[in-house]
Length: 318
Image (cartoon, rainbow, N blue to C red; front, side):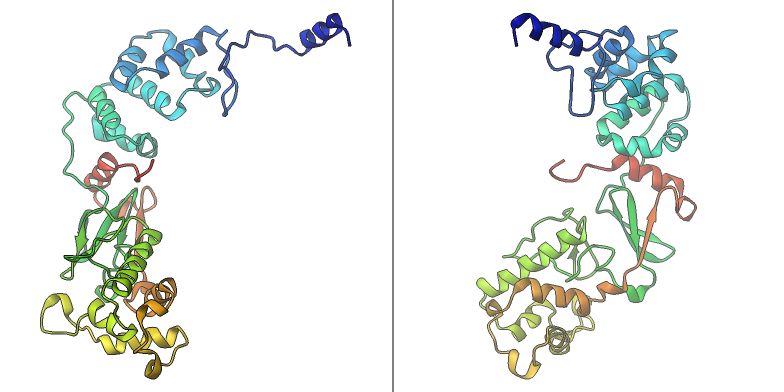
């Protein structure tokens, strides 16, 4: 094919507007030829205080630009829509604004941006009492833990604490052992770690089993005396029976408690031991209740719901 023919073919394939470098992003094309889209892209690069002031100063253009946000590929839709909402609802009480846009403010992710927005809407805004992920609550006399966007609560005192803490093995830290993961908070007399997910809690339990196997070179039966020391009258060890604990776990693994107790813990698969502990060891499978906004908003005071949203942090790695 000659050069002229190639040029004619490319001309027929050209888009109806100029496409400078970087216009097409993974989530779709944007149209910088539209001055409103170009303005939204410019606003998108501003820090939150500057964005709020700029949107507030748009005057009569604000309504037109707001309707084009979802057409401006490359713009953070949620952040931009919240900024336009804040400009339109300036003077509203911060908490009223927060509950009107609760899910979107959570999705914003960063507390400094939430704070800037709430102060813009309501200059008299005072942050609520801290309720960060990993914090403990008491609801109707039962223990509960704040997680990212929801609460895990005991259904009854018999449910224990491991489930609300995502801690299938009721693992805590010690002088020589520091569990991976977790919020850095603990719960209960035994000071068991509070994790952010079941997977994180299981990773902590597996790490604890491997620590005892490799560092202390303990036996299978001996592990349970270290993991759940016999009841000695202290609150931390109340009700513990390491021999019965070992027997339940061994039986769940299909092992004979009479012959397997003396085996080195290192000879067993740590993950298999952890799964058996989760199934029969600490009452984890009895579970509890999960409270979420907005389905359970009536079951918890609004100040706590508001504080949870305001203080929420992004998971590690995000």
